[in-house]
Image (cartoon, rainbow, N blue to C red; front, side, top):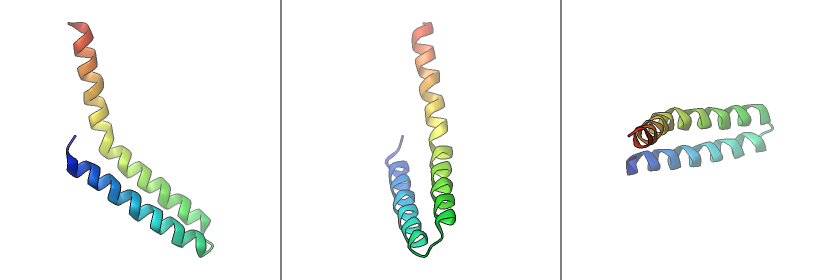
Length: 64
């Protein structure tokens, strides 16, 4: 995992939290929820290959 991925995740988190707060204060709770959900899915798509690699390495380690 590179440091740039961590910075990307942090940037998405900051952006999503700001957008969510703005949308909630303007009375658009549904759009705020969808924004949070979209941010979560984006980060998950970035993280899933690393999780897959982790499980592959653990499987290889125990199969010896």
